[in-house]
Length: 182
Image (cartoon, rainbow, N blue to C red; front, top):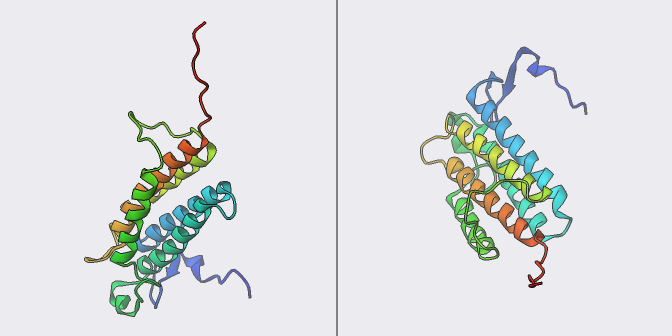
């Protein structure tokens, strides 16, 4: 099987369950932003270490983004063909992110001022992924149909990534030596 088809050489791309649109149409643009977000999660995952808790969390999120891309890549008239949790984002998928955010939030002291990304390479990768997810959220607004959970999922995911970055910063902080008077 060859990776290239030449069908997109005319500037169009196929939608899931049929139809072709220009590559700069809202649906392919949103899919591209979500695809970039998934790659950014993969970059963070590469720094997390295989088999770590963070690695497992990020793998699950990357899989969720496949579901989200399927929904975004489907024309509204074919939406009835989507399967909840496999090609259609569900409210349960959104809700499932909240206890993870709550759990991780309890593992670090909350910042008392604006956060400057870059405390650690891994936290910076998570912050970068968060900003890409925010862009994907803005793009998805143009294609999400009423009642879709796509935008809420991306909104909650960006909150989770912010939380993950702060959690990772907290884990990487060296223990401070007690100050002594001289």
